Image (cartoon, rainbow, N blue to C red; front, side, top):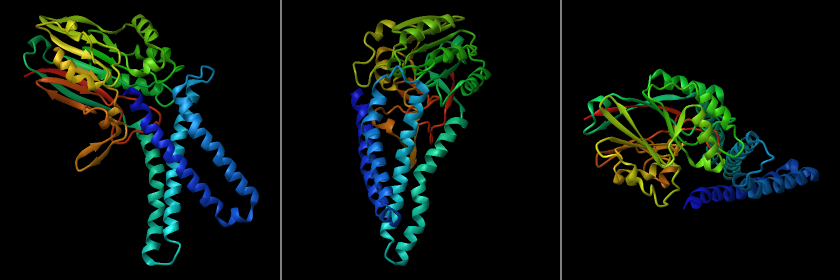
Length: 382
């Protein structure tokens, strides 16, 4: 299922792009300049071959294989450029289709051609706007976690959550420091890091962890690992180096914290692959009589966590959808196909999960309808 989740959308997009590339190339070769110039036609054909090889072979290889000789930042830029190319080819295809239907004179068709320019430009404009928002629109998202039977000494406990940082060329030191300042403003008792500190093999995990040392929490900083720590082959390094910097990554283990007479049991698991058996043995990490809180990157584990006895689950992974389209007051995003828990606070049987939209991006450095988020949470008694 994890392979399906990663590859079916990508293959669909690539095949669509290859079809549109051929359509655009044929239209370009039919233009008067290309008809008069054989060299220009050869250039269009050669470009089509090169780009087809890249999109059909190079891009999938780049996403799946670790080329250890290739700088991680270069990989990130190549992936982003490929996705922007897809937006460009969609825009050009729309433009040619509008021109094709408006070639014979008719007032309605001429109006279609007039509308064609802004419609064709929409994919590129949205991609550019989403890139701008991903870099500038960071928000502090606050939520109260209302729990029955919460001990009075835990009432009002403040938590900051940072997740899906994806530290790299599109979310670097300056942006991370801004997120840290926003978290510290809350004066949290606890700070939780819930996975995906980096994106791929070769990303600068050390700089990310070193920058995160600016976080300040009265009772400590705890975390769990996400799927991209696995892809980056950085699980052990993040755990050991994080411990040197004071970050406690919980890997199928729990720690019991006391606040006065109140007990807060923190547990964490490494990323749980989609629809695999979730959280095996989780019941053994639950402490009866305490408030039990689980750190788990994948929010789809929430029903299983609630069944095991966890009062609260904190997750990320979805990026809030990263690109959300609101239709009839409902947010639609690719994440909805894989989990019903996409963004914000959910409740089932008086158990809670909070899914943070996170900070960074994957593949394309674009966010629409899901701004980067520093989550500021508070435990509240009912």
